[in-house]
Length: 225
Image (cartoon, rainbow, N blue to C red):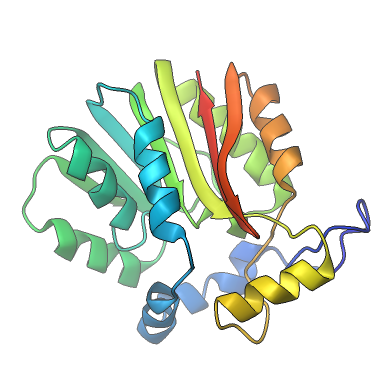
């Protein structure tokens, strides 16, 4: 649908119900989770490599928001294998997959948490990451979450968010859907404008905010404390 605040942008989802209400039942379905995890997004590997390059040299503790099957945590720990990690997700099937990925690794703690609710984790963390998760939240909650993340990071810490953002036009939105093999919008998507999200990060108190990668609706936002 078209964002009334910016006629040139295209937002997916919307409606009267929040994303949590729309998607709560879907994310409890193993087949829905399997389908979501099987999706291929062009250039994602490039974006993930740039995410790793944006992290601090020393990472001792990392928090992953919307960890899914643990892909992002595994990515960070491929470069920082000694980092203690916490992964949060509200989906039982996702949590089961993440737990299986890390098996008996005691340095990885997988926990149930709905990102629509305030974070209760105890900082500080050197890194907070998120992969294709925050775009499911309403804009007001995104802004609140960014402020909470800032509060959890150590000085010099980094928040790296690889996520989907709203398209610059309906035509580009349709192109993105075609590129990822989707015929319809995901009903749980709440895509926000990239420039707005960068501004929200600045307002949350981050000293250095930038977009390190963008391809159509896939964007890597990096903010340092």
